[in-house]
Image 1 (cartoon, rainbow, N blue to C red):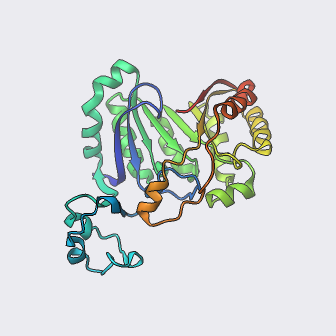
Image 2: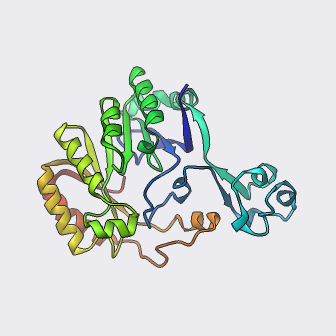
Length: 293
């Protein structure tokens, strides 16, 4: 049976597509967005999170660690021995291998809520298309069980992977970061050319998709970006829905727990007035705009 790596399954989600949903978060992402709110999802291997405030100084982790990394974090191999020994969850491994059957068992626990709310299942990440075979197997199983499916993706994946899952995906939640190529490379670590060409393919194939636009002050809310967005949306044709996702700094603690610096330290959150102004600027190019979700 197909298996893959995930780092969370979130029930009763209201932000990842229509209705009440279960969101399955895949581990691993080829992008390195500086505003990423799930930095623990970037690696394709389970990683250790450290919450020093929970530590009671019992010393069990020191005896359990085979790499002597409890005193020098740079030696950590993310093996998880210290997390197993920790009685307070001050040390926690993020990421685990699961089978399609195990994921479906969790999904089906809340089937009644999907049916009553018009919801379903969303596969997010990380980047779900970075594990294409596992994603395809899950989508095919959901289709057999008549579950509505959504895939939250950056679009940074081979077209063949997108073509394979498209017949089994009811809705794509397509994250569009930046349209200026050089800025996209700087802030995400990759080119946007594949992302834009895959989006055009979805349009040509008349696939159902919502655009999700992260609004990061000073980065994705500039006059240049808004003008490029207007031009690109005009080229795509009428988009069914755009979700404007306001930046927040709630992930800073996750970066600390991973032992990583937070790239956007000091970046303010956009005001409601700023979000509304962007919504008004993009309103002529889509059927519906939502702030959040």
